[in-house]
Length: 199
Image (cartoon, rainbow, N blue to C red):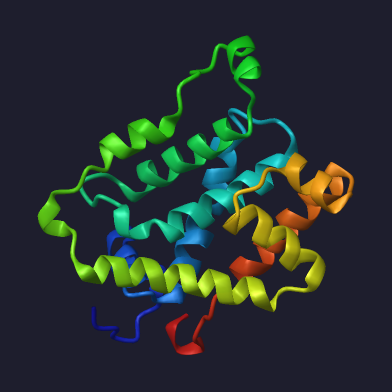
């Protein structure tokens, strides 16, 4: 997509997603800024703790950005993003809590997979390269974090350890682990490269 000097903030979601697929980091930032408040509001329907809402919001964007190649343009970007946010929120709620609150007990990820079934013709080697480039970027950024944040970020984002497992392995209070992971994710988003001429 050719950039004509107009601000990225004036582009539609579809245009921003096209740029994001080309690994334009500024497009990711604009999408994050555009939907940050909405995603937090959406998550607050399921989670009441402010710190948890912020944590889930950051995790939702991280998931969406790393999976941007799976987005099906037949659906609104906001719908896709909010489904990821809801799924992430449900991952933070125990099955018992869901039953008490009369929330669905099945994982939304299955519905998300069904909704995003893309024809085989749309899968090509470029998709794999894009996904690998995005993953490599997250790995490189994690390596740049301070040791305290880098350790928990690796365990949570790469090895998929939960808060309790990390707390036990590092012999830290679980609240300390939650705080470090939340701050690490916030730092990772800020570390996305944004070129001045694109803003």
